[in-house]
Length: 160
Image (cartoon, rainbow, N blue to C red; front, top):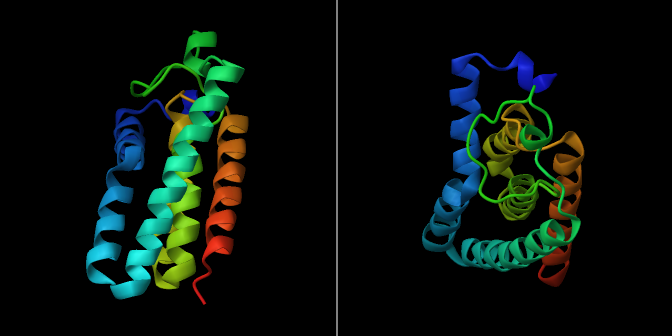
């Protein structure tokens, strides 16, 4: 339903651009800015993000290989893929996992970043559904895993 309601070219372009930034582009730039321009706290935050990112990639790839849930556009001819997926399976959403995880770590250290990162994270999660690449449950579980990994990273080295 969401996929069909957002088929207008402007929506597809917007969500494809958001999704592309969520591939890692924005996060790598943010880590670089934090590490190079925000002192010791920025270096620690960037290191936490990078290490948590490695754990996140490993975990979501393992889950996708084990659970082999086909993407919505593969299962249903009524759902159109708004952009090409990065891999075959849909569960969980790696984009959402990383967006939630990186956002939570970054704003734990630099709360003002929340004004930009929280709306961006919501758009990344929504983009995955709108583009026909994920089911809502893929996005929900990806977000929960990202939240859990962020909490573990922040427990290991709290920003206070």
